[in-house]
Image 1 (cartoon, rainbow, N blue to C red):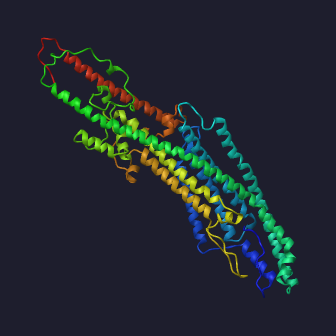
Image 2 (image 1 turned 45 degrees about the horizontal axis):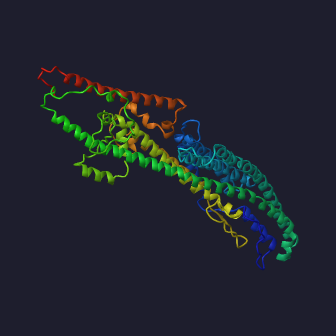
Length: 540
């Protein structure tokens, strides 16, 4: 409740009756019209958030950084469950005028899952940002012991929060009982001393009134701790923004590298076609063929290795690793290709999905690279959503006084009565609206983002949400469902990750088989070309 102070009594008004009605409307505020309907909307938001949290719930291992999806969904589900109880209690207190002495139990308890949710998500973002910015010299911004100590210290702050929450619930019950006794005393004094002045009435109830006010003032300790906790969470979220910048640099680097590989493949492809055309009609025995090249039998280069971009033609082995994006228009010349490549700063999600679903021999080498880029972009958007939610919710609990903290449970200040029978209005709670709207929008965005980046465009669900594409091999669909944690970690854990690992191995075997087949065709062609010197027949 707000700070309890004796109101100024107008002249000609019974002071005992005025103060008694003031306390009645102060401790029993009346709801605004439509408050019950808004509570039902809140229940709908809580139910939707619970369903979306269950749908989005997934686990990617044992590390907190890799389990952002599971932690975000789990604590969203826990917060929605606590808010359901809080909403039911709020309805009974505000509408039915029952159980007023228990009103602060769920009001205090609702902050615990919110704080834990914000702390774990915020610290995970900060930890990932620090790890992603480590240099090759392994210089630690925060040592592992210090980082773990700060993380555990954040949970230790919850101990006094829980203790003060329990104290608040019991203190409010005693305050409510003391308020009822004070109102009974005012009624008795009004009957015994109806002719007393306002000053005499205030002096008669001053001691009892101050005891009730002191009980309310003691509850401000909870507010001070909430302010300290939320300020720490805001600072941790600001530090976690470094991870977002690192992810953006990674996406730009890989996208730019893919464009360089693609542009360098066109002159090499043209030169190989020209040389093949000039050899038609020329006797194959006239040029002296050297020994078979051992480069064809060596290990293929990494897909992200740089290519030679100039007049020198790269080796034929590298042609297997060039990036070919389906649906791209063929450039007319090298100058137009260079101009077009400068105009494109990144590769769209649709182009990456087409490259990831390309089952041809030319696109076999780039499927994994495109899938990793899709997963990286998904993590980038997840970070934007989670950091935005944390920064938006955290300041909602930073207030300057107990009165403004109480405003967090309402949409506006309850107007105190200026007349004895002027009922104050109690708007709907603000924090549940803010939190539920943010969580529901975030879970919906994260789910659609996962579907948009990691779902095969040939599935029925992708067609429903507007992701159209050509049919792909069903064996490749599971690879596109990998997250960045599964792509980068060495031990996946969990049966789902094991199946994904098997699929990656199967894709790798297919790529190696395609390359062996390509090399075998070249070797057979050379054997046919190496005919005796007297032979004049040649097959093209």
